[in-house]
Image 1 (cartoon, rainbow over the protein chains, first blue to last red):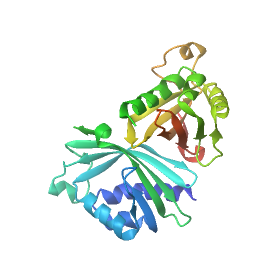
Image 2: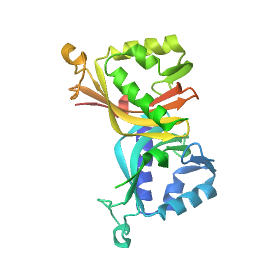
Image 3: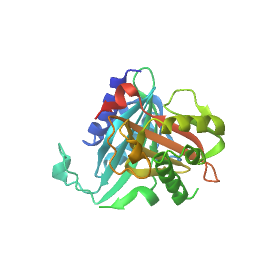
Length: 136
Length: 136
């Protein structure tokens, strides 16, 4: 698996989520992919379930802000980020948001597993509201 | 699994590694644990192999510096950090090192899986020298 393809997919995940492009996020996944968010909840499996999940997620007025670099390991990537929830005006949502002003934050680490076509076959999200949610 | 126990184990991992306490790090693991560092290399399995791994690792003159908070998810934890390699004097290794002066850095994300006794049964490290190693 090409390193740059995996790095680009992670960057696209942030870029697409942050412009509320749920279809674009779902396109990063293989047709039979699983999304476990957060572990150990029941995985969302397959295109329809994954698109529905992200369609709801991008409506939450959230911005994902990456923390540090994307780690690559074999056919996997891992990356840390903060979700800024509830602080976006309708204006700032339109195009670019450099300074998210969220009212709550959740710290998350995600892992992606890739197939040879560069699609994500399994995403696992690590966070727990009792530990990783805080008010700004 | 108690959140605080998992958070404490991650903190102990950093604290013990950073004083070159390989035995103390190995004590965080269950007897039949696996350490896959980095994925997808062959796992180190069981107390002897894990202790040998950390005994060698702490001799590398490295300091682990956590980035952001420890994420908890079910019986798992995930955490991001930077390894500062090769910058420790014999003096600074003795007790506390607040400002690591490493000459190389590796960005890593680790995941821990815990059993009901609070011991780590599986560690997976995400990093690739071609992507995550840089000179300071």
